[in-house]
Length: 126
Image (cartoon, rainbow, N blue to C red; front, top):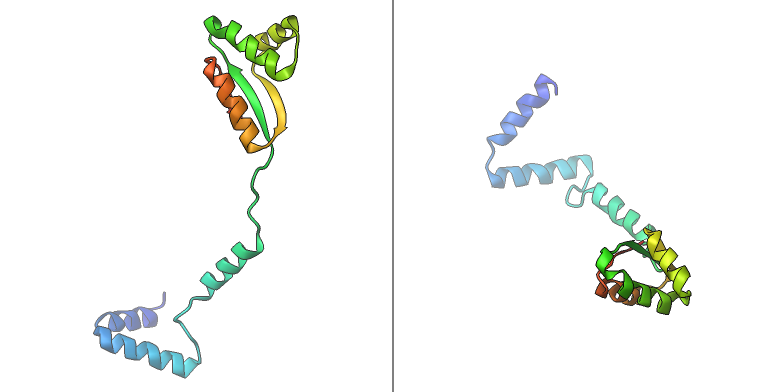
């Protein structure tokens, strides 16, 4: 800032609240501006309105891990959910992390996640 603006700022600091309010009104009238509503806030609000929120509607259920002592219980759930045979379900569980099902809506993905977690598996939604 220049020396001149620093001097003006120091003088404004010494004004009372009433004097500052009157000064703002005089500046608005003299320069034909309205400082009561900052333009940046209006721009930000407009930008938020123009950009629609994107909500994830499809989820993939990812089997991350399972304790070795819980594999048999998990095999039963995997067979039920995927329709795989015993050997295929065992190969599936042995190759984790692996996606169990893809493209599920939120509710179905949560239900499947809960079923898998009840067997002791660690599951995530993507």
